[in-house]
Length: 269
Image (cartoon, rainbow, N blue to C red; front, side, top):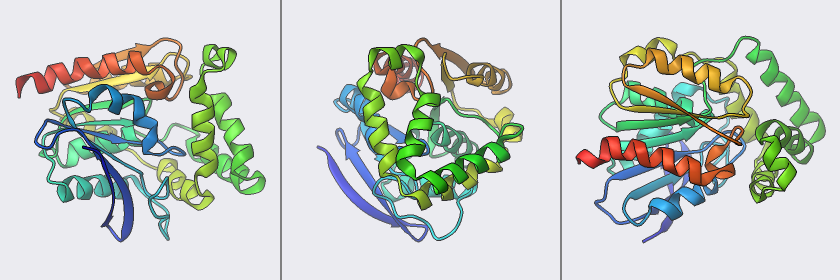
């Protein structure tokens, strides 16, 4: 049975949604910057019959309150941990994309009792060289031109040429999410991505980790292949015809990858 509720942790009200049977193995989904929990609708449709699913909006996004101060990856990780503990979930398979991928990896390293397996999609373990300036330029663009104009610039980066040419309906859905994101919420979380580094924690991960990247997401496939080399129990999957958000752009391929990770971990439960 599905239920949406608002949970107060770390001084903010978080929008959360639970789907699937109580007591089933747990899947948790953490969204990217500029999106919300509906990003995962295709995964819920595929897996809620067998798994307990928790989705939540990261701080400043969707129905979650905008924080009064800039976010950090530490704080995003603490949010995720607090929500899992609130709902009594442990040993979860934690799935995140972009900002959510960094959250997933950080949580797995720092609260391993909460995370038994990770799927990290299109995310990095540290701010890229030159990333602080790039994020500042995006913040300035959003502030100067507004979120609708910022949405168009972002969509051009995020989706593959194949999806753009075919008019993939996922583009319109993500456009709506970006336009609905409060500017202050975007800026707060963009600050977290301007300066973070968890590379030293990756070799200590002991969970199965699946790293996924869209083939059209710039240098991300190369970056995530490199991450797979330093995480002890990791493998990498590249998804064709996908950009930064394979979970919504090519959901069947993404779900097949997640099925493989779940089979590795949850099949033993």
